[in-house]
Length: 345
Ligand code: LMR
Image (cartoon, rainbow, N blue to C red):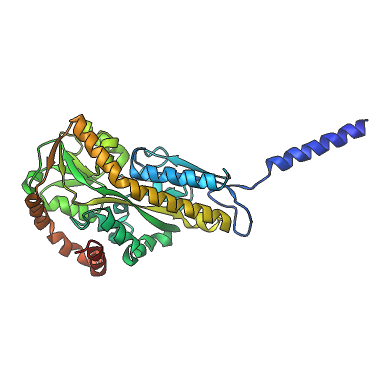
């Protein structure tokens, strides 16, 4: 009887062990190639913006697709609002594979490669379609690949949209109105040059600290898309907004090369298709989310809104034109040419 009980105990213990160890759980995809079947994996996607933005909607679509198609074997955890990593540390944590996906504003990579200044070239792209055509083209793809030395793969460009200027001091409708003001930028030599050309100062501040910086007067203003301004309620701490569309916020989905290469074929196919799905949604939603945000900003009535006339835009365009010559060598005549072609110029 005792022997029988022992055998029964060993049998059920073995069964429990087998059930618990049913799949190899990998975080950041250390499962390795060669295994068949979808790897049990937890993927972290970190970003700095709010939920009602094109980036978060793209991330959600990606999560939904991957979790569904993998029958729940792959979990995608999304961390918005700099809740896991902020501008200062998300890239380093991607390099270290502490996070598997980030989708940063490309202008934040100018320190790695000055060609990431493209979204900041004044009045280069009129709309998302032109920006997408550039980043999907040969030159854009080449720039997205330029982080491979860090073990980082650039997968797909996600647009947000054109940027507009807010400030606390005065309504702005001509270059002279910038005189003596200080603006927060996402960073980068071209954005700095834009403000110095207009007689203003600039400082790069992480997105997660921007509301407080505006509130406390560390800077007088900032430039951003309607969806970022509205979702972060910058209008609560700014008095004027000029619709400029002079520069852009564009992102790309970046992943860690070791993580990516560590996925077996079946798993990678699902994750890759998930990235495509996220790209589709982010690209489809960007315009309408920005339009909605603009309407909300108007309804809330916190900022005085100035819409420039085409003549006023031309004055800015002419004023900022010398920036193209200044950066041609650093960014490359070939990049300018590809961008102009994408923009239909
Ligand atoms: C900003 O820092 O203003 C934006 O680039 C944030 C973002 O990711 O859209």
